[in-house]
Structure formats: structure tokens, C-alpha cells
Length: 274
Image (cartoon, rainbow, N blue to C red; front, top):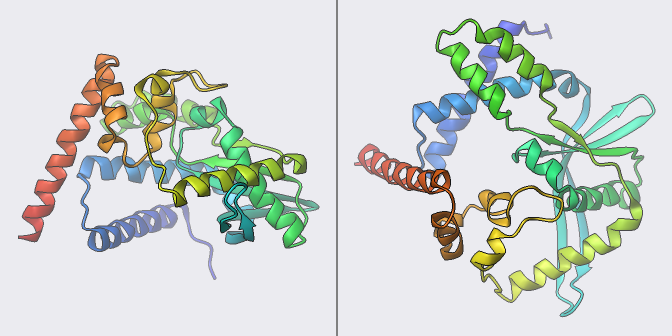
């Protein structure tokens, strides 16, 4: 099969992106305004450009890993752990990667939860499936804010930002090495079990507002920013809404913009389906 040119690859990325969006729109009933779609497409383009060499080295993608027949620590509830990873074999070295949609800065602020997840996957790959493993890493998919701003200005006709865009692309480091320590795995699996018990017992009470204001260990931001911003139901959480309304004007404005955008999306969806 002939190798695709850069122009052909770019065209394929655009084509697959639009196909995926249309599929998600039809299956989920949700629309996204064209401005956000453009940002999402730019993220995909930049992600490919930055990580193309790594993608070319991936030997196995979307490998499903399962840790079956686990028991929670207190109530002995059975459960299994499943995950999907990519594997790269480079000569004598084997690396395990996991993709995250979280900002690289947020990940680096507190590696603990990411190490917990990836170390369990590594344990499955190495000890249950009997494969070699030398290292693990996270690949953070979002593009940095400075890169996003440079790209937007360049696309708006400001040619002077092309050099700035290239500089920000060079600075961007989406791959975050985590290593691997077998000694930490047992404690991590027990922590997974404790979470399962809470879910099974329907203990879904949100943290208090004071807890949301506390700084995370090893992080520079509060719990309400560091953790809650990745929760899909945060805008339905009374604690989070209060936390935002008691925060800076920027956070309050972001909340109001989100609520307005949600209302606009609902109205668009209704109009499209009438």
C-alpha cells in the first residue's frame, strides 16, 4: 500500500473527525457549535503532528487488560478491573501508554492517581499475561493554552504568530513518564476495592464546600479545580455550584457561560429535531 502524503493524511484526519462527530451526534442526540468543533479538530491535528513518531512505533493499540476475581477489602464484594492501553516495542524495550484527556500540568501536579491506574494495568500485562515491561507513561491529549492561543491568532490571519506556534509546538510535552514499581500494586488494588464498596453501597455524597477549597497534596490548585473540573456531573452538584459562586469572578463567569451554552445546545437540538 502506497504511503500517504502529508496533505492526504490531513484530509483523512478531517474526514474521520467529521464522520465521528456525525456518528456521535446521531447516536447521542447532542450537537456542538462550529467554534468548539474547530477547536476540537485543531487539537486532533496538533496531537497527530506532535506524536506522529510515537504513533508509528505503536505495535499494539487498544489492548484490553482485565484483572478478574478481585474482592473488596471490607464487605468482600467481587469485582474486576478492566482497562485499555497501547504498547510500544522499541528493540529490547517495551513501554505501556495510556491516553488521558486531562491537561499535562494537572497530571504532573499529582501523579498518584495516574500511577495507581497504570501500575495495575502494568501488573496485568507483566505478571498475568507474562509479557515483558520496562516502563509506563501517560499521553496527555489536550494542547497547552499558549499553543491554542497562538494557533487561533495564526488562523485569524496574524502571520507573525506562525513562529510562535512552532515554538509552542516544540515546547509541548504530552508524554509523561511514570515508571513502574511492583511494590505499590497491592495497595493500589485495595484502594480500587474501597471505591467499589462505596459505589455498591451508593455512597455518592459530594465533598463539602470547605473540602473543595482545600489544596490537593502535591498540587497547586484546590480540590474543586483539580478534581471537580473533570467530573461530568459537577454542574449538578450543589457543593460545586456553591464553590464556584464563592470563587473568583472568572470562575463565576465560566459557570454562567457553561449554563448558557448548555441552554443554547438544548434549544438547537430541539429545533433540529422538530
